[in-house]
Image (cartoon, rainbow, N blue to C red; front, side):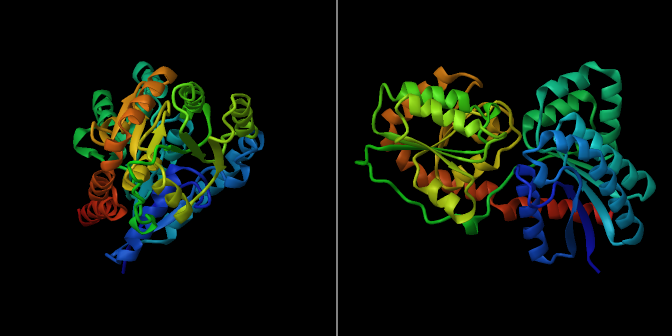
Length: 375
């Protein structure tokens, strides 16, 4: 009989990279039929409350208690559950949320714990370092886990500095699903229209302020361009504010907010662009960047999280966060070298397929599960 791994996280209809990661991992491993079945279990907020922050806070404790009881019942009655996989970000509430479940699963039911840290907030890491109580609670969760996955080498080094067992820490990444990638469109070098694209939440934390500022100034230097921004706003009214700023700057025909687009349509739009731009202030390992690279897009990104490991001189340019001038300079540089950058498309795509296709990441997790179950 198959061994089960409970995968904790937000509902599968929720927005966000963690849900996409869990969905891809579950589908890939369950389709293999390798003796391990991944079962998603809800813990946390519901998508229906995404745009209702006050109601979300009011109902959160109710949903959380319900979810913990549900998970505990599964652990009592399903003896095939061997592993519980926790999926917090390095943020207070997710860490506390998953610590309780980790304690129950490990101490009361002797289950193996896999901890996957998806997001990383430096401010909270600093609080852990400087607060003795936080540090003890943090280390209790991390050292109770059997395997810890992080999304960047930088994060591994910081955990080791805190006192987390180095032998438990592995580095993974987000991924793309190759079946969703359309055939690459290879723009002709005599096409002078430079096409930029962004994919992610429309939010200040994603660097949209800097991007809009850079686009307005860029228009003073180069006229033959467009930029499509794909994604939902982090709170109502944000996109309208940016649209007004774009309209007031006379860029309505060049800068388009396309909203949320998924699946083949998303990759079709990526494949028709030249440059992926991602000026986010803080990241783990953003799926959107992996998907852009898989589509062959040269990428301008900030130097945060796993982007320091992913972006190199062949596939992109890294800039500092919150710096529209650096972003503008990078955009000008790629424009001046657009023919050479377009010629790199197949190379960038092939390299991403070797590193970030879902089956590669799923195989690594499957090996980890097998080792934990057999030991």
